[in-house]
Length: 396
Image (cartoon, rainbow, N blue to C red):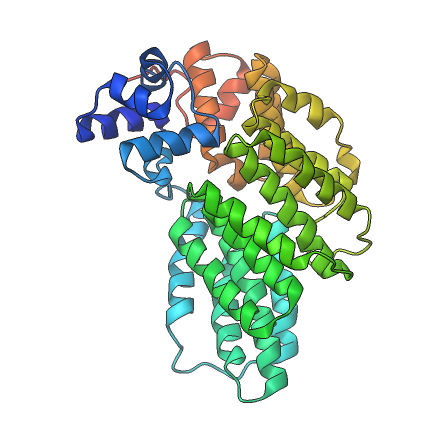
């Protein structure tokens, strides 16, 4: 059972650094009482901007405060651990007995990996991704131009998917390295959609790691480079980059920049008729992002309202549906609707348990709900058990 939370980690790092609560509060821009409530388990850290500000003031990484990557305690959690370990080798090591790679098979495997990621199918990702990264890297170095081009395309696909799959599990440095490799490969080929995909992965990794300005810069520059695109693949990433730019701007408090990026993404979504990258750039997905942006844009309690405007029947992928439930739950918590928040987290857990049970925001809020309720409803106890949080846990 997990018995810690972000506030405890904040207190530990503050003590190590010899800071007082007042000094930390001054550095973050909040009151000493607020820091005290965080450390004593009475106020959860739920905004990315606050988490980043705390980490920066303490001189530590975001992962030092989230506690990620979590030590695996089940076969399912071991999957992500094994993927991360094997991906490091796939980027650097060559198999002595590597068999010749069939280009068509490699392309098909890259597509299967993307399908698996959007379905939150981590078992399939663990089986496919490491070999796919290595084999596509080797094929990209082929002397045959056509084979090399196929290898580059598969490598960009594999490394962007790998980066996106592992970044939220705490492997941010490795995810950033994968995204950088994708950008290098895409740049060598000069294919706009691949360059957009790689830039999106890099921007996402930067934001996850706490580099908000870099994240915004990467997204806006890549979107500008795709401006004027006409094919669905490039348009997809043009729209997705604007969505990410809107989120990055929200975390920076640049409220005036959020709406234009959202509007551009929304307009682009109406121009896309196919989905070659499985990103679901649709008005529905723009609505899902609007919920996430509200959580960072000072409108947390409005997130459920935005979520109700999203038609679940128009969401194709498990990843998107689970994300909507998680963010709606976060918004409901902010609005004081605790039981409804629990229901949303349970819905997300039914869809993608491994996604839910490794998300710091979910674990932070479930722990807070437990501490506030001292046991709580049967549904809360069930959710706490699934997240391995003691339903009778008291703040340390």
